[in-house]
Length: 209
Length: 191
Image 1 (cartoon, helix red, strand yellow):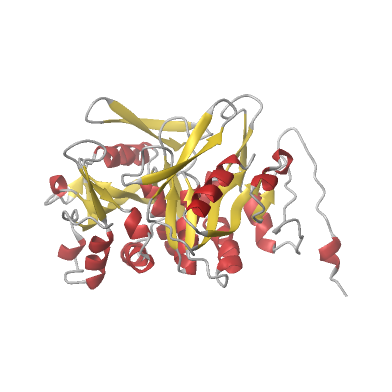
Image 2 (spheres, helix red, strand yellow):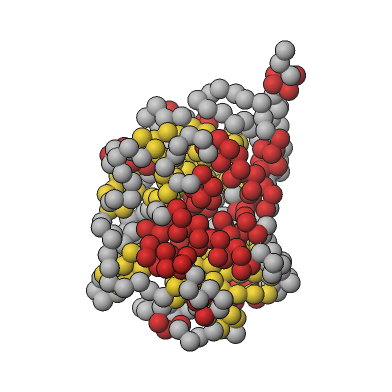
């Protein structure tokens, strides 16, 4: 029989000062029993109202990085998930993807590839455009960094609309890599980014509603 | 000071690290031989060696903070912090950090830039190491040291993968020790 905790749901309460996160480690909507480390991580995320502009509740992960246990737990959760999946490349999205991607890559024996804003990478690059609220931006990757047949994981701190992650998936697929999954610490599910991942699964630790 | 002069002379890991770094001529502008560490990140063994050398050096020095300079310092700093049980603090370009920040100016070849840090990130008397991929003039690292000292923290050392000729022979930056793994790679470019 199933343990009781598998059916338990955390309730969400909003107060003037803080939000409790409902969180889960999910893959394409399949719920698993919540790992006890997730609560420690979610309580460390700091919400900064009206940044970068009014109305946005910014999810600040720098406070997770200030807690060695919470940061280690974050990395461990992803490493445990991916270590036996023959991932050959971890691609991290500038700049906060650089905070999580390399430790994961090192632990699972994969290459790390930075996906960067325009003109930062010194060598020959390919780029993919994606939409911002106003206008477009570009994500670049070095030619030769990822090869056909590479099995890739894309990492960022947060998924909102999914535009950046979609651009990352496109870059990797264009060079013949297989994107196995996207991994983010935080998801903003109301922005439906999960649907913009070209059918690729998303793994996240904490939801913010 | 260079790692080879400080206990790691002849260490084959240093050669592997050096060999994995790609030189890109004339980037970002003519005459500059850019030291590209992205090829080091593609070489899992060499990347691991890089982290291991820093971790071995700092793990018994009671370091409570690893600060990394955006953006390439982010590629090395967090792994070191995780391995030695320290906090990681990102030092960022202006306007990126969402909370209350302090900032320090530093000179570029033409003009200035600023480095920012969250005010609550570092406490007085904390022991800090500052990480970047490369040290050239030391301007950015000096700004980082100033940020730490303004909070009453002690910078134990600055650590970089690559040190340009300007710093060879310089053991200290703003009075703080500087630890560097390798000199710039030669003209060999990896295709």
